[in-house]
Structure formats: structure tokens, C-alpha cells
Length: 219
Image (cartoon, rainbow, N blue to C red; front, side, top):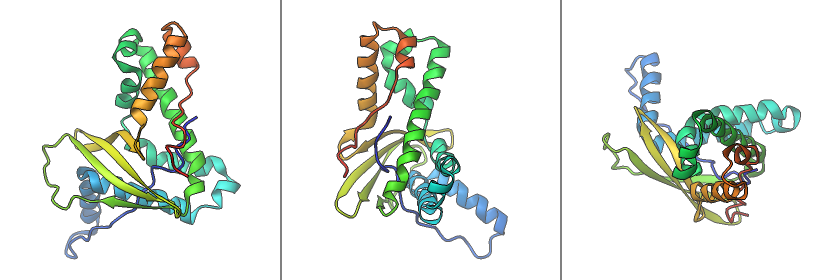
């Protein structure tokens, strides 16, 4: 399973809205602003994650399934799993796979990532994340953006880089680099090695897939 140890945590900065605005319109505008700005998108979801960690830490022991589901509900919509899974398979194996096998791997990859992420989040409840905002960001025509953060574990600080791509009006994570470890490339190398070991049998490769990025050098 993926052992990235809470590398996807972030902090949140709330932007003020007009006091004269209608409350419901204000909420809608705030959500739209978060979705349209990749820096706010990463940072705001981080705060939601931190809130679960700090306010519902006991739930991890009393009802782990419910706890993990809360994390998944936040994390899953953030990632373009279809694009990431296709990248992990690589052009050769993506073309070899049937449509059904491609869809199957999306689900396999998503489940393995979300399960491990949720399981390990509790260990990093005291960590802090600082997002490097781009105050000058305003280009709505950009399709690809990099958002950088620093993970402070208390003992050390580690750089995190999120590669995001705009999908319609929303931003989605398509790759993460943690402390110099490119997770997308790591997973792709693992998939190719596994496929070769199974003589390019896609079904056997999917059946034996176990993602593992180590601890990305974070301790």
C-alpha cells in the first residue's frame, strides 16, 4: 500500500466577503472562488482535513471506518484519478488495455491510495503545512499550475509540490512531488515493472497491483 504518511495535509486561509452580500450568494461566491483559484483549492481542502484530524481524532479509535470515510470524502474529489491512472499505466499499457481494464485500474488505484492515505493521516495530526500563495495569480486561461507547500513535522521541514490541471472550471491534482519524490513517476515505474514480470498480461498486472511510494524520505 502507499505509505506517504500525511503528505497531503494543508492549511486554510479564509477570504473575507462583502458584508452587504446576500448570505447564500456569499457562500456560493466563496465556493466558486476556491474552485477557480488553485492555491485556494489546495489550501481550503487542507483546512477541512486538519479539522477532521484535530476535532475528530477520537473517531479514529472508536469508528475507524467512519473516520476514513470523512477523509476520503475530502480527498477523492481533489484528484483527477482517471488522468493519473492513465499516466501510471503509461502509453504502452494504456493502449494494450481494454476500456474495461482501464476503468478497473482507475478504481483499483483510487482505492489503494485513499485507503492508505486515510489510515495513516492520524499519525500526522500535529503537523503543519504552509502554502506558498501566488498573490499575483489571475490568469483564468492557464490550464496547468504548480502549488507549493512546506510540511513541518516538528522535527524537519519538507517541500511538497502539487501539479494541478484545470478541468472545465475546476482544478484537479494530477501529480504530487514530496521531498523530491515524484509519486506519478514512481507509480509508473512500479506498474511497468509489474507488467513486465507478468509478460505484459494486463489483467494479471491489475490483480497484483500494490502501490508503494515508501515514506518519501519523511520521518
